[in-house]
Length: 371
Image (cartoon, rainbow, N blue to C red; front, side, top):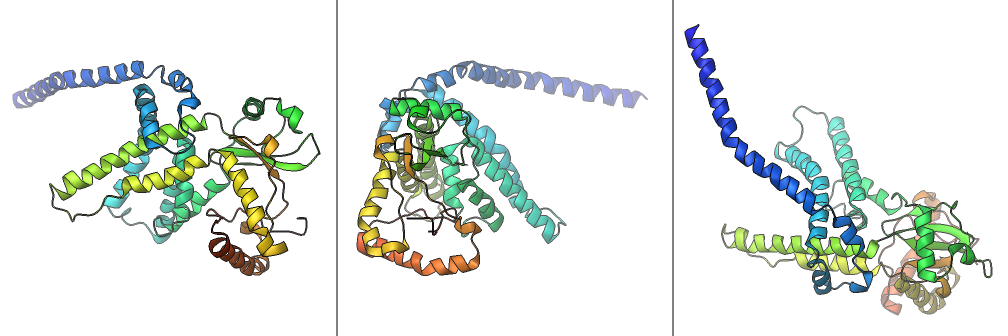
């Protein structure tokens, strides 16, 4: 009994000693967390007060750095948001990888686990917003990089992104075009978007003047600020990755020397993604295709008209085209269109020197309803 009491006293004393030693670090961590929360309390308001006029119209890393380095609170708040969303999923995937899967699971159970992780990845990218959705869309056509379940799930990001309130879209249209949306389009607060994508959403409506039916694409609010901040943070991350590879892996640990590519890869993705924020480029591209491509291909291909009078950087009106998505078309329709598709892209590459670089199964094929 004495030995048992002595052992209990010894254990109790050790625990109290350990608690005293951990108390200071725990208080420091708690204080740091509380201080960080207080520091970040006004980050959202500061973010909304960053003027879009300060940001470039085309991708410019130095201009991004000049703006966002002056707002460290916004950067830290967004970084905390990204880490909080990515870290749990990354930890689970890393755990699965290190132990080679789940011991004793069947092939069907493994496939179900892969599908679950893929859905979690899609949800993570969707929650993090447009920049990450665009990255997911780029990966959705890379079966050489991701397993089939992940590719299948990420393909849903092309046309299954949550929409935002129509009231916000109407306010943006009025701010861009200088008149209430209802005076320019047959569109009101009860209108629902027919599709939503990473950067905006689309309404099917008619022009008040002339009555033409149009597909009206309206950008999501705060896209220029949000995307530029994400690209700035991602580029800082890629710079750190390159530094780590060169200074630690190669110079310190003796790994094979190779040319860094992380920043260049990010810049390529960022340059194209940021350009998509200016819908005037898309309208100009449509007109170029109509002028240069249609005369070469005749009636086998149709390019919708754009309406410059109601098109701005954040609003794009194009002719509405009826058609069934290729992904939902029967095999005989797809087979019939293969020759047309080959002719179209060969002409773009070799004749025009200007080509559509983002075709996907959501594109509609020509139908008898097209003029």
